[in-house]
Every structure is written in structure tokens, then in C-alpha cells.
Image (cartoon, protein in one colour):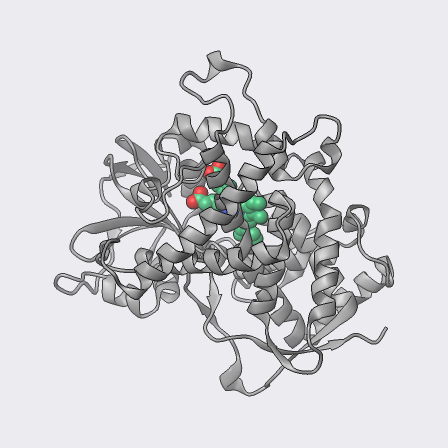
Amino acid sequence: MATTVLASQPQALENKVPFFANYLDYRSDPLQFWMDVGRVGPLVEIQLGPMQKFWVVTDADLFQQILQSKSKNFPRDRQIRQGNAIDNGRTVFNAKTYEEWRWRRRLLQPGFHKRELAKFAESMVTETTQLANEIPQNVSVDLADLTKKLTMRIICQTMFSASLAETDVLQHAFEQTSYFGFKRMSSIVNVPHWLPTKLNLDTKAAVTDKYRILGKIVDERLASGQPKDDAPTSWDMLDMLISAQLDDEDEMPGAERSFSRDDLIAEMSSLVFAGHETTAMTLVWLLNKVATDQTIYQKLMVEIDAVLGDRPPTLDDLDQMPYTHQLIQETLRYYPSVYVTLREAEADDELTVGGATYAVPAGRQFIMNIRGLHHSKEYWSNADQFVPERFSAENSQEWHKFAYQPFISGPKKCIGDQFAMMELRLVVPTLLQRLTFEPASSHPAHQVKEAAGFVMETDKPVMMRVKSREI
Ligand code: HEM
């Protein structure tokens, strides 16, 4: 009979130095740090500086408990919910309470229904074709510049039909706020917002630009009386959010029944933020793999050419391209854009793993170690090898559902997961039908490695020589 061991404390990470505790190890290489902590055990206590204690979770059953079965008691942690004084619109992402999160998610959800998303497929392909035509041939281009421009155009077009000029300003503004977010996340003391540091000033200017443009777009839309009821097939996400209504007030006391002007601006901002760099960096890693691994490239192109020839992809083609799908899934396993996320226990609770029960005090903060989980040998054979076929229909039963968490699971899972997968499955063939990507240098010193940013970045620019493909 299995015995239950009552353990009130998880294993604590050693190598603490006075004041900093584990912070210096973390600071020297955050990605390696999370990987190393994951190898110590399923639940490990770390301390970053004198004040910040976290439990690091690298176990599929614990992911299931925290994100799904006990999710109500484990909201995003206080830093996310407090937001920051520079950019503090209220959204589904930083909702202060479960009730607030719930009514916001209920208003957003219909816009992400599969039927509504299908309307965006054509824009995704059109934007990709246009960008492919603009790329200068035979010169080295920075892959992240290219993919960030592309995903920004797609998200601004599908969310609120922005012009290209607005999209360019928004791209700069969003990348600055993401850089600011990462700097704050990885710093041991938070520099006050009112100090005139370069980071604070640049971020304030970016946030002002962002709200000016989003405010103008939302105001013009509201003033125009759109959306018109008779043309929902051409609605963008903003139209859908303006028309979203809750009808069962009783079920959600205290809920807003529809989004206010300020809600619309903030939610739009949060959707662009959530969907821009995450998707762009997934494309960078995927295209880098395709450019450096001939076996993967050949297998992918055989599929794309057989299904599409030289016509653009549509949604109906996607099921005929399983290898493209597997390649995207493996990219998200190996290089998850969101490599960690944070949770916090609202009330005292218990978590169980491997026959041990841990008493969780209210206020305990958790690092959900997504990348550690995706590379755990316990769940993945050849965990550190890139093998798209592990996601084929015949192999898919082999892995634990909660060991694959690129979009996380449970009620707060990414609302844009289907949007992102559809975008990636359309963009990859559209780009590769037209273009070839060749590393600008094969020198080992130019090989890229993962690096921590707000999302997972590369440690150096991925420079590629892009050419038109001869079909
Ligand atoms: C490859 C692309 C993407 C990845 C890897 C990704 C990943 C994630 C993850 C891991 C979360 C959960 C974060 C947490 O709970 O702490 C999340 C939440 C979220 N994502 Fe995504 N995401 C992607 C694309 C998108 C897109 C395209 C959109 C919108 C168009 C989007 C909108 C959101 C929103 C609104 C949330 C918060 C949901 C809620 O609180 O209910 N994401 N995403």
C-alpha cells in the first residue's frame, strides 16, 4: 500500500549567498537557471534576493492541480495583477479578482470562436504574401525583424484593421513595453516609475503613443456607429468586442455587461501584446530550424508542394499538412515563447506529488517552469532532440497532456491559442512557397542559442540570406 509522506516544505535550492540568495545564479543565465532548478525536483524552493521566495514547479501533475483543478485558488501572481504605474489598463490578463477575470473572458470568448477566427485566414495569407514581396533579395536580413513586422501587421489588421503607418508606431511601442516588462521582471529592486531613467522615459513615450493610436481607432469606430448588424462576416475583433454583451446578470453579480471605451482600448492593447512577439519568436525558431536542417526542410517542402503547388493556402488545406503542424508543435515544445509564468496561492492549500503532500501557505508565489517541463526526461524521450514526428497521430498518445504547456491548460489558458496555431499553419507554407532562407554565416560562433527576454529570444540576431524560391 502506498504511504503518504507529509512534507510541509519542498526541497530548497542551495548556493545561496548573503542578501542575494539564488539571485546571482538566476541573473547570470535565467534560462539555464530554470532548467537546472527543474532538474533538482518537481517542486523546489528558491529565493531571489532578500524578499522574494518562490516555489518552482516542474511536474505535470502539479501543473494540472495549479492550473486546472485548483485554478481558482491560484490566480496570476500579485505583480501581474497589480500591473505597473506606467501602463496600467485593466484587462483579462491582469484582472484583480476571479470575478473580474471571468466577466472579461466571457466578453472576449465569442470573438475567438473557431467560426469567427476563420474570417481572419485570408488576411493572414495576404499580409504574409505582401511582406514576402517586400523582403530585399540576396542580402542578410534579421529574421526577428521580419517576423515581428509580419505578426504585428497580422494582429493589427485582424484586431482593428489598423493602417500600416499606425502599425509601425504600434510595433515600436509594444516592443518597448515588452523590454520594460522584462527589465522589471528580472531586476532585484524596482526602480520607481517617476525617476527620469532612459528606460522609464522611453517607456512612457511608447505608452503615450500606443494609447493615442488605440484611443483614436476605438473612438472613431464608436463614433461611426459600427459594427453594423448586417455585415458581421466582415467584422474585425474590435467590432466583435464592441457588440459583446453578457445577458445572464444573475450568474455573475458585479460583472460589467459590456466593455467600456477604456476597456476596449486596454483589451485591444493586451491582445496585441500577447499575440505579437510570442508568435514572431516561434516563427524565428522554426525558420532557423528549417534553414539549418535539410531533412526537416525537404520533408516540409514535399508536403507543401504536394498539397498547395503554387496556390496560397486556405483553412481547408491545413488538415492535409500534418507535418507542418507537427513542426510547429515541436517548435513550441522545444522553444516555448512563454517559458515561465507566475501564480500565487490566494488561501492556504495543499499540493500532492509523488506520494508527498505539501502544505501551501496563502501568498506563496509559484514559477510555472514551462520550458523545464518541456525538456524533462521524465515526460519526453530524447527530450533535448528536436523531433517533430513525436506529435504525429501515431505517437501523440505517448506524452502526458499536462507535460505540454505552450499555451498552458485550464480556464486561463491562452485565449489566442487557435488564432496563433492557425496563423502559424498559414504563414509557414505561404513564406516557404515563395522564399528560401539560408544562414548568412555557417561559422559556429554565429549559431544561435536561446536567451531570456519577456518571451524567449535568441542570444544574437539570426541573420538569413533570403532568396526567391525557384519552383
Ligand atoms: C505562439 C503564440 C502564443 C503563445 C505561445 C501564447 C502563450 C500564452 C500563455 C502561456 C498564456 C498564459 C499566461 C498565464 O496564464 O500566465 C497566454 C495567455 C493569453 N494569451 Fe496567448 N499565446 C500566444 C498567442 C496569443 C495570441 C495570438 C493572442 C490573441 C490574439 C493571445 C492572447 C492571450 C490572452 C488574452 C491571454 C490571457 C487569457 C486569460 O487570462 O484568460 N495569445 N498565452
